[in-house]
Length: 132
Length: 246
Image 1 (cartoon, rainbow over the protein chains, first blue to last red):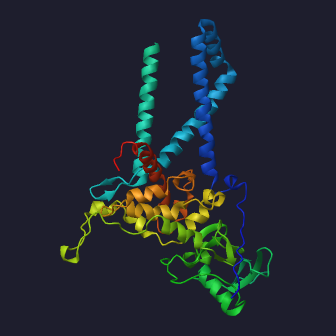
Image 2: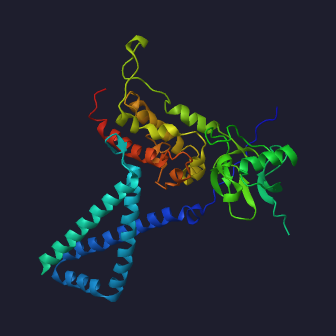
């Protein structure tokens, strides 16, 4: 009998850059945008604690073209992250059984995305209403 | 000018003890309307090269033996028809992420060990005698785990999983689907034993929710769901163990 000499093929180091893994890589990278946006908000909190002058500087930065461009990019990445996050949601929860049948993943994603969109819109409206 | 009645297959060959590393070999097979990749391999073995090694059994996508990389994607050779593949040469390789034994045959020992490690059988809540009759289950209780029982152990999900590619000790999608098949069963009481087996880095926590395992599954088992809902179960179990009375 021949002895077994299995050959191991290493996984290419750039697997994440190739299909079908690109969508996953984009989803995970867009998570970095969420972290950067958290950093922007946190910087605001720090400048608020440091006093009115510091706060005015922060607001000045927010109004600058650089900040506006950054926010457009961040918003696009965060929206992409939200959409793909809810696409992943059905994979992370137990099967929803209603009337003895499993609820399809697309339905769960659709409802959750709608709910997130509606609450985000409500929040924007409340903030706009408060600041006027 | 290639013969239109023939189809080119580029097959990764490896003969242990002879070849230092695998290399592609090219074969031309007589094409036919309904020719599957498996049938093309069988015709090569019958007429061109009897030394070509590959696994197969049922020819109808229920045995899970003929999983291989076809044009770079993990597929069952029996249910992949040549006419559905883009024109030009078809590349056939052994499943990614597994050691190659010979040609298209990979080592399955590691996978079998993983299956064994998760207690792949019902551990009854209460022992019943035959006289007491069968364990009953409602349609909803069946629906909670039924899809996970459709797994045919073809290992396509492992070939699609980059985390298994990085860490061969990762329990992986297929074994987790089987784990959920039993943990989700209303007649079973082995949940704690199985959770204890998958808490570590080589358990569920190697998964980063890439999700391609579920896309390549020929039986729509959705192993990504099995892995990811057990991350939640594993986390809950970690925090609640302080409250549990042993």
